[in-house]
Length: 476
Image 1 (cartoon, rainbow, N blue to C red):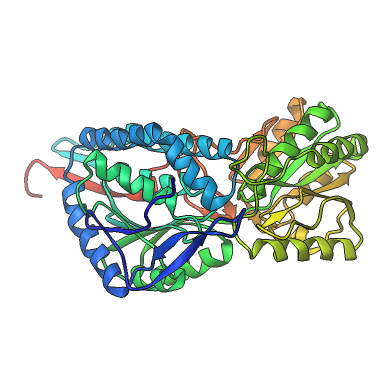
Image 2 (image 1 turned 90 degrees about the horizontal axis):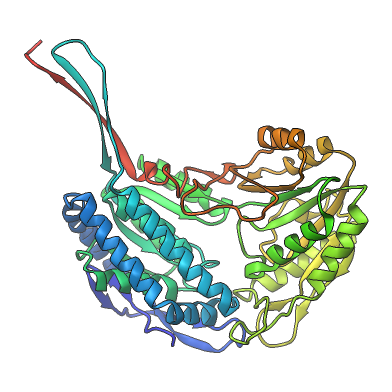
């Protein structure tokens, strides 16, 4: 069920002289060998993308949309194959992988519709003159997607680029390549012209340093850590290349005293452990009003402890392993540091077993602000639950990190909601739900969590340029 691993350049699949293993994080067994793009492969991808852009930009928006929709339907039809590949390489439960496939298809379906709505406008002018605003695709896009969502993250990048009329070179994650390969295969079968979508793998630094300085590359679209995002932004700035950055988060959850504590705790624990906590919008820092702190913490710990951890291919598993070996020592160190500084370990905190990269669902209580985990995104199944005396206190602590991607709150008070909307510094705020985004809503961060938006009617803006045209009836 795991696909053959190849590069996809100029409409053809190819191997390379060097490769690397792709491992199953639940068993540590090798799934396949992933080819690493050479400098010549990358040059070929750029040349192909230039030729593909020349074709695709002149393709009628409705025809572009039809091709994207055909590919999306193929992804839906192939849901089980794609989901199985994702679970094998990433470790997430098969049920979650199936949902990810559908979500990826939805990104394509939404942006296919938006491809036909890249409207310009006419601005009133003096007689004999007309001002018109036109939108044009920016050009070749160098896109970089992370390993935590092998299907839906590449889908977001590719959907926006193709819907806008751009061509794209995608550097997908080496740990989890199958999702992007399935997407490329679907577009190949849907009749996408050669060169419009190119897929490469390899050393991330080498690929970014090679692609970003290329003159045809007009936009860098990246999802990943803030540290890497800053490096790519600096490199792009040297060449006056635009960037779209969706960077790290450290999402706060404000639990007010008026909410249904049991439901909020259960929702929080389930969502925290989804994807093994490896989600940039994962709820992590829970600030709970002191009146309901004990009840919330008890219910949360009970639900977290009941989480069934195991191989994602096994029925009944709620949470799989972390996606790679390096996550386990990182999570262990964060827990040890927090406990050394006075936090209470309510459950979990250690690796599970000797085979696979499993980590226990973990809850830390009363974590001091001096602990590393209060300022560093754990990107794993660790929840922090701290008491607060008031909404003022909760908002101040929610904003006390440089990140601002997603934030959450549980309350039924209109005055609290008004304050949360106005004062919590995030790009995505959800109240009484822990869902951060949908294909039809704009998604992105503020502060060190990036800039630009994907999804919604705003999702194509970064992939377009704006041209003002002034028509004069006679020479002036």
